[in-house]
Image (cartoon, rainbow, N blue to C red; front, side, top):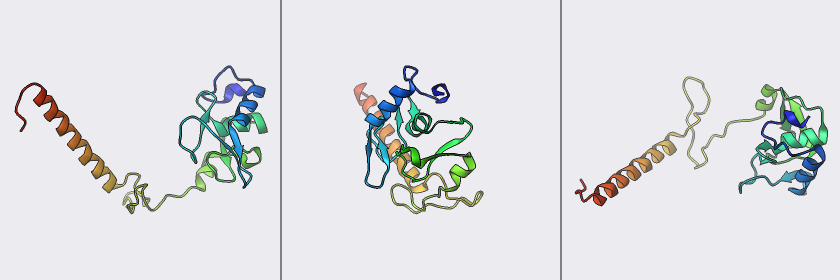
Length: 155
């Protein structure tokens, strides 16, 4: 059954993967079993045991009857939870149905509605314009440094 998990390191057995997940997780007061995966970000889906998603690996070893055609969803809504009672398999459309778009970007700007789709734009125009401005300034600075290193006058 473990061969169906994409990205899972091949040296794991069900017992060792179960022990590995339990060793890397902590129980919260609300009942969630939160796993500590690779990287420093918390509150996002975690990857463990090679490059496998922790919630999928937990579903396989704790619940069983894994169908790779379906998505593993967390009923609690906590992105890094691997509590077996919170995991369930649903279709992709059902998994996406509960999500909603945020009205503000991560920098706090109001997001615009795309006229073609009627949904929020994926990229915030103000953040994109700021990023392009920073890129142009960085490129101009690098060109000026390069010209100065060759003894040319900067424009």
